[in-house]
Image (cartoon, rainbow, N blue to C red):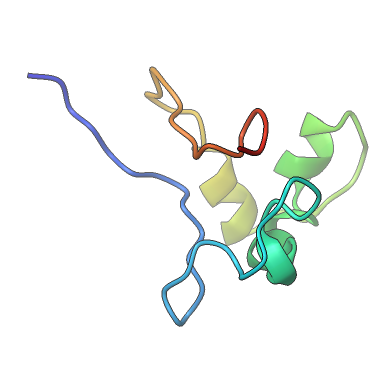
Length: 83
C-alpha cells in the first residue's frame, strides 16, 4: 500500500486554501498570494529564482524540506489552466 501525505498546503486561519473569486487571472481568488507571502523573503525562494539574498531561519529551513520524498504532485484544476 502506498503512503500519501499532504505537505505544504497553505490554509488561512478561517480554514480556506483560496479566496472567493478564483479565476484564470486570480489563481487564489481575492486574497491573491497573501497565504504565501511569508516564503517570498527566504533564501530558498531567492535561490529558486536564481537571485541572491533572502533570509534564513525557521521559514527557510521548513521550505528546504519542500521536495523531500515527493514522488508526485497533485494540484487542483487550476494548476495548468482554469476550467
